[in-house]
Amino acid sequence: MTVTAPPRPPRESEPIDREELEALVEALIEEARQRARRRRRKNTAIVTLVALVGVALFAVLGRSAQSHTASPAVSARSTVPAQVGTSRIAFLVGVWKPSPSGSFMETELYAMNADGSDKRRLVRSASGRASWPVWSPDGLKLAFAKQLGPAIGQCVVCHTEIFVVNADGSGQRNLTGTLGGDAPAWSPDGQTIAFSSARDPSSNPTLYVMNADGSGLRRVTEDVADAWEPAWSPDGRRIAFGRVVGGVGNNRDGEVFVVNADGSGLLNLTRNPAMDHSATWSPDGRMIAFSSYRDNTRRRPTTDVHVMNADGSRQRNLTRNPAADMFPVWSPDGQRIAFVSNRNGNDEIYVMNADGSGQRNLTRNPAGDGHPVWSSDGRKIGFVSNRGGNRDIYAMNADGSRQRNLTRDIDRQAFGIAWSPAQKK
Image (cartoon, helix red, strand yellow):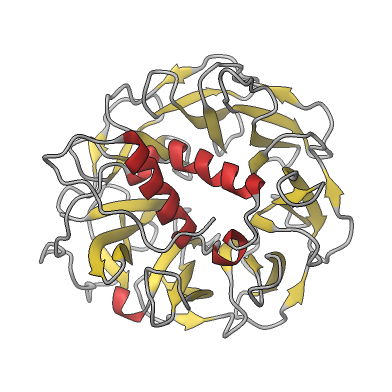
């Protein structure tokens, strides 16, 4: 799939065209996750996955506003140290910029307290386009991918690298150099970072791990199939990830794999002729939740949230709904799973018990709501919504009450939410 630049974002006065919006979403996600190398391969399995992500993240990308400048109150990084012991939320702030071939979204990395206070810019767009923020286990640093190259936003000669930055915006460092990297994931002990990388345009994205300072780089999977979205097991011994397998050309499917951190013990867990993706570990490491197309039909293509034991056994469909249910996220205590569903006609945040019972719509808003993340204590859920016509970061109690806009004072698009663990004193 070739994406040169996102289509022109609709103006506020224009009706939202679903086809145009989905094309926009697809293009932005392709850019953000740097699938440029994979797009040249025209892999139908990956195209299907991206299309699914585009629909599900309707809330994340919503209706794009015209370019604005940041509010003076939050346009520069504060010189006051971040409060120690408080939970922080990292997020991306984007603005549309014109280009010779259309337009692209320029992104910067921000962080704020969980109540929306103390907003500060950590990474400026002038030094590269930030994406995929993820907190270190101690909440003191952020790893993220950053797009580099002269064609920022257009992916003509651009590439991404893995960076880290302190929670106050200091100490920004490139960990991968010129290797290239995407989708960073911290190990539970904070000593190691896993990521996906294709070292040249002719190779498949494969998994690598490195020490948290960038040293000790080692390859985990071979260059025989695409690998993406690594997720560490809670004990730090294994990494789950998505991989394209089987057949050739357009006859390939996505599966959930697991591999030991040293590269041994590679195992296909799902083994199903369908697209399985978005694997997440339960907090005790005994189970893995994932999204799957396996129960779709020709009349109503859809996806459901599934769970399985960590060894791949006892795979079962939890949602069983004709609508699209996807992107499961475990609560910190492992008792509940938040997910995104369009069963009410638009994307909403749902929650259910870990066995699939008690499914409830928490957001109940005609706008698109997506990208749920739990607070470290499990009492709140953060999400992204385009209610009001602009993408903003929201938070609510875990029962859906007290939904509030945390980025109202930033008149640009806010998305890419990541909730930190509480910082240790």
